[in-house]
Length: 185
Ligand SMILES: C[S@@+](CC[C@H](N)C(=O)[O-])C[C@H]1O[C@@H](n2cnc3c(N)ncnc32)[C@H](O)[C@@H]1O
Image (cartoon, rainbow, N blue to C red; front, top):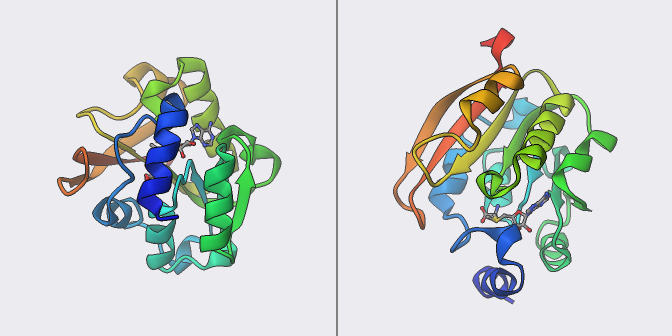
């Protein structure tokens, strides 16, 4: 089944978990991975869906053996296992990464953070920073003008952020934000 057909079928059956009107474009995938490369070491992706951002991460030069993805939807997981045989695909919520990962150079998130309850959003981003090594980055896209967390949440987690891209060629247009620990700015 094509990526697009699979995405729309899952959107109809699980609209809240997906919370997007289309898979990310290859332009957004490139922008999400622009700070990544073979030097990044281990990379973890949250909410890969059909794998558009996964492909962007691999295209940036991250080796398949260095990439682990966490996806809750079993149909997406079967699709990802067939499409990306060399990567580790976990059928598990993003926040369980703390049980499997350490020394990670970057977490790339395609999760609909803003559609989640605050407690879950905080749990997920806190989990990302537990597995990130010193200097590691958390990359998140959003469709709105602001980052996908409130100022209070960003402060509570001790983070700082910057806008790293605006991608017009995406449906809808998206912004990419990179978060780091404030002490490492
Ligand atoms: C907006 S879609 C993004 C898909 C893909 N990353 C893209 O950009 O085209 C969000 C994805 O996050 C997944 N998801 C939602 N909550 C999750 C969670 N807590 N842990 C892991 N995946 C989750 C959904 O199943 C869906 O595949």
